[in-house]
Length: 226
Image (cartoon, rainbow, N blue to C red):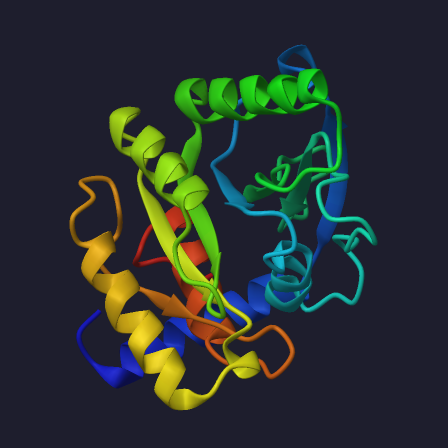
């Protein structure tokens, strides 16, 4: 897409899609509970308290499809959400969103954290239908070592990902510019990272329409308009 009107049409089509059915499918605490790999999946990962649930709610236009935990790090499963459903009875969704356990600062025993890590790593490395992963980074803090470790793992697994700055309304514009510039420079050094950096605010709606369109393009193809 090269023209502004193309981007506008893509955002409108994505908005229409997400205004339709978006339903919780299941939680998978272990690999054997994953749904059959039959439709594209877009995974969301990031440090605990990065604003992942809020971003999922903003993207889907729902208030509580993804519940924000009172205690960061409590989510222990992969949570799957069906997006779009053709009218035929029993038809598959168009794609799925996957809410992954937050990493870092998890208030849980070491063995439990290790179990989460194994689940996340196995899913990311071995899921054939994974179309894209979104790595969420708190704009107030920028990239941390745990984010870099995740990006390195995705690079090594050849899993394409987008880096998304969250909570951009929480810092001054001048500080945001610095964080965005530094993050973008680092992102460009990673082979599996999409070169475009996404700046978002779930609370103010900044960047949500563009990211929504990007998610749909990743899942269904750039030319998809519904």
